[in-house]
Length: 379
Image (cartoon, rainbow, N blue to C red; front, top):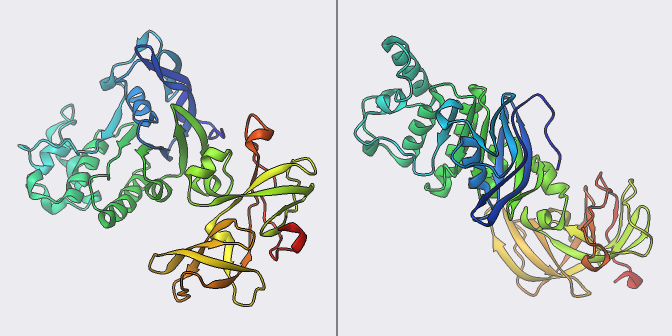
């Protein structure tokens, strides 16, 4: 795991949590710097919401500790009360008070302020989220997206040290979800807020967060930027989970070359495998380009229209299948053979499972030159 550089506002150090005899979190460690928007990404049941509840102070720890702004807030036998942590939360269901106006909802946590200070802070936040004109409306008079903005303003109003967002956009339709997540990110950056989002949606995580932790079975598999997770996955599990792609069998030629059905893939950096070792090479859809002039051909098995692009499933001459993103004006028929070439900027390979207990990522991850035409003795 690649941890963010210090100073960090939030630190989880080998956190474990259990329900009865079942341990649901295993040695979870990561750190979030001030002003950073981070995300825990994973499927249902992976433990990401439990991490959020531990940070908020709703769940005790069985091992490890959580530090907020240098202060230990959770460790075995000690749990700082949630209301003393200065943490804001935005929930999936908004959790607005239906009998209170928008302004009253936003000002709910500001009772310690004088009346004029509370009014000023509420007006400021409603202006920030674009709902100044709705101050005297009630939640049922607002759209789902507007209600979520009110929930965000309410969470930001007390100026929390950390903001936690638990699947906040999942109840919205796709178009509104994408637009609102972009708007909320801009608001958080404007406020210089530190935030942690929990989601199962890769697109949401990629567009929203500066850093992402991939969670699986109660553990962090990799903590990195979206770009690094996609182009430099640290394990086969992360490679399978992030984006789309296939793993083609290959054989290491030398320190800088791996042969597979697509040809000999070359990298200026040594990949770290032994000559002759059997590996699997990660091929993303954007690595396989349509090229009518190429002598390398592949058969169209399936195509999915995505507006600006088709996602083609292609069968290579030797029987392997790859994916290819092609501009949608190239509308090829199922069964048609089309020309392809390969351009791989990040060469990622893993030892075959039988060859190693732990999958290893090839270190040849800088821009690679590729001989994309399969040779007869390499198929």
